[in-house]
Structures are given as structure tokens and as C-alpha cells.
Length: 130
Length: 410
Image 1 (cartoon, rainbow over the protein chains, first blue to last red):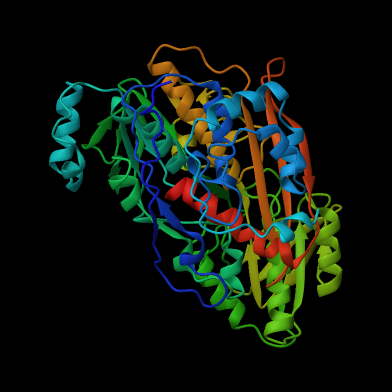
Image 2 (image 1 turned 90 degrees about the vertical axis):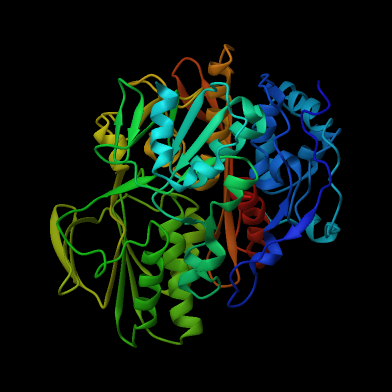
């Protein structure tokens, strides 16, 4: 696998905030920008990459989360991670075979781990309601 | 010829500057119509996965897309609509995607061209239609008087203003279309969010009536039923809207063969739905009014090299933003496989996740995984479930949308 395939170089966290919030959450709180330039100039199919991309709606592009939810870039224990969670993740985990998860992990583990900007509130996560 | 035609078009457009000067070799051209969850994701992932080897152009009539996801929170004042608007600056600068801010009016399938008017067009090798929904009206009435607010934007703001004009003793009627429609939990969510707002924030006694053409609450029944009971929402199933009187705000509906009328101070009719006009006018739909596709690629089963993702396509999957984002990646990958001479991935999977607010501080969720089934050539649900109403889920909702917005528009 070419090294330049996915180089999330310089994970620059910049805030873009347009529009103000009347109350509660503003854009600044949940829309952040991570520069992920397209670094490949040719296409090679990768089943693991395709399967893993279905996770990015919740875990961020190329597995780099911009919210309190986990980043999965660099994840090398995907099966365990998927199966120890409750709520939505528990149901998602049931939908994938071991072979599919292995293919996803094979792709994700080669991505550079995302810098953890905010510490997850593990306590809150554990008492996840379902 | 192709290049010349393309530059002929560019000559009359401001997007000429967005074409890199080095683009001398002929690259496959993918043209995408529609900049919502489906279209924006197809464009972005074509570039992430194939970089400069593919030329990607996105066409949308608007300068920004307004997310229907979270738009019910504009109605109760928890969100400002500006927070749900996503322009095309990132799409253009970060991913080098050409953006044409025009209405695509028709497709010349034979010559592979998208026309903007009788003269101006753009050529494509692959065309993606991510054009969302259109409405089937019962009769000719004015959406300004009876808003749908089911395509977010001005309609959302209009409905918000009308909700804020309600008084004690008024009746607010919300009607739910026959499935399939965009965002299955959405109308039930809206009924709850608005009822909560009127009752607990505005301290008004407004009768909230829900007319549902379906025979029961379609999703998350337990959560929605409980919330309906709490707010005193009057829910009528099998209630098919047959006429809308926009001057007197009277909705006529049929229930068990009996025609009934209901007068409201505010009517929010969410009409039945079909694929967007360009999909229907290009003869890409069947009797369902949606476009049949090969669900391994989202390529039309009617026309080669045309792909339909998101709400306009026909399948067992829900019509919703999150799953459109996932379908879009399968479509982008399939297009790249096709352009580069690879076989399709045989067993794609999609997933859907969605939080639904039930008040200004609580939400529930719904999720599923779908798998391509070779035998039936359809998407089969292989896992699914729903959450319970909680304030924690309300907070989690923004962790979900934060990443979904970023993955689609960022």
C-alpha cells in the first residue's frame, strides 16, 4: 500500500463558525475542519476502504472524528471496540461479519491515529441508554 | 469535441477559474446534479479515492444546501437555520471539484450531455443524479399558505413564523404522507417538537392533530406514542389527504371510506413524494415514481452511465440523509471501478443512523444495517433497532450530526 494513499498530514483543527446559535450548540461546537487533501492520483479498489467508509458518517472522514465520538483512524482492535459498545454501535456491530470487520480494520489500522482533541467522557459513554 | 464543448460552456461561466491549468490530458468526467447529502458525498469521495485522475463537476441551482436533518429544531428555536446551511466553498477549494450554480434542465442521454437551457450544456462520461424528492399534490394549492417544510430552507422559516403566530385554542394539523417518503421518523418527530414548544415554551393550549396516511406509526412506535400521549396529540391513522383548501385552511381526508374535513389555524401538509422532476422527465423511473438501480453501484437499470443515489432511487432503504451519504460512497467507488476496469464490489453494505428530538431537551434514535442480497437484487436489513427517549440522546444527537455534516460538507 502506498504511503501517500491517505496521509492525514498535519491534522489541523480549525474552527469554522458561520452563523450564531440562538441557544445550545453553535456551529463552532460541532463543525470543525480537518484538512484531508486528496493525495492519490490514481484509483485502486480496496474493499476494506469501501466498507470502512460506511462508518465515517458517525466517526468522521477517514475515521477522524470532529465530535466527542471516537475516532477510528489507526484502530487495530476494531472487532473488540465495535462489540463492547452499547446503543447504536451494538446494533451496527451485529450487522457486520468477522471477515468484513477484519477488512475494515486492515484499512483503518494503517491510517494515522487522530490526535485526541477532547477526552471522551467514558463514564457517560458506559451508561449509554438503549 | 468533448473538450471544446466543455470549454465553450466554461467560456460563459465564472467557474473557468476553478479548472487547474495543468489539466491537459483528457480525464473521465463525472457530473453530479444535486449538492445534498448524496451528491456532495459522491463528489468528495471520488476525489479522495481517485484524486486528479477524475474530473468532478457538481451542479446545483442553489448557492448552499440547507440540511433537513435538525431542521425541526429551527421550528422550536433550538437551532438557527444558518447552522444548517452549507455552501460550496470547501467542495471547490479543498477537493478541486468544479461547481456550477445553475439549474440542470434536461439530460441528453444519447450524447451524454446535461443541458442548462436550449444552448448551454456540459458533457459527462458518468452522470450522478442526487436530486432528492418532489411532491405529489392532491390539488393545486399554495405552499406559501400551506407549507410542507419538507425541503429545508425558506419553507422551514415560513412554518416557524406560522407556528409562532398560533394562539390559545388554535388547531395545528400536520399530515404524514404514505411511505415511502423522505425521513420516516421526521413527521412524528416534528409533531412532538412543535407540540412541546407550544405547550412548554409558549405556554399555549393548541390542539395538535396528526393525520397519517399510513396504518400506524411507522417507526419507533413506542417512543412516539408515549410522547404523543404526553403532549395530548390527537393521532389518526389511515387518514388520506384528498383535498387542501389553502384559503380557508381546511384539509379534507378520507378515513375508512368516509370523507371528513378539518379546519386549522395552521396546516402543515407533507405531501406524498416521488423522484425529482429531472429523474422522472428523463424516463428513469418506474411505476413507483422512483428510479430502479443496481444496488451494487446505484447505476440506473434503465440507462447506462447514469447513477441515482439518495431519495430519488428505488429500494427498501429509508430515504434519509445519513444513508444517502453511505450510498454515495458505494456509488463513487463503483464509478471508479467502472472507469478503471475493475469488477463491482459484490456485496455492499449500507447503514443508517438517526436521532430524533422529541422535545427541546430529549431525543431517541433509530439505526439499521442493510446488505445486498444477490438473489433478490435488493438491500436486506440484517440488523436494526431503536433507542429510548433521553436527555443524553439529545446531546449525542449533535455528536452524530457533527461528524455527518463534516463527512458530507467538510
